[in-house]
Length: 57
Image (cartoon, rainbow, N blue to C red):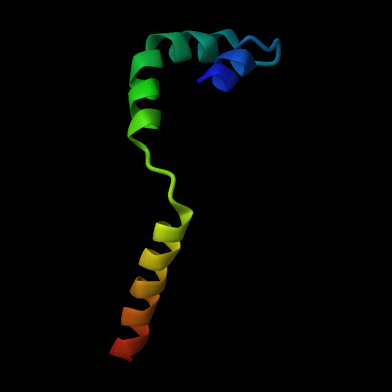
């Protein structure tokens, strides 16, 4: 969140974007906290999905 907040203070960010960020800050924090970053598990899921598609043909 600190990186997003720092970027929002940049002069290139339009005022409406800053307002939207402030209005939705709690929701954004919740969604970021709920997101699980596990690239290995994601790759395994994608591989299984592709394998099942190949098995159907």
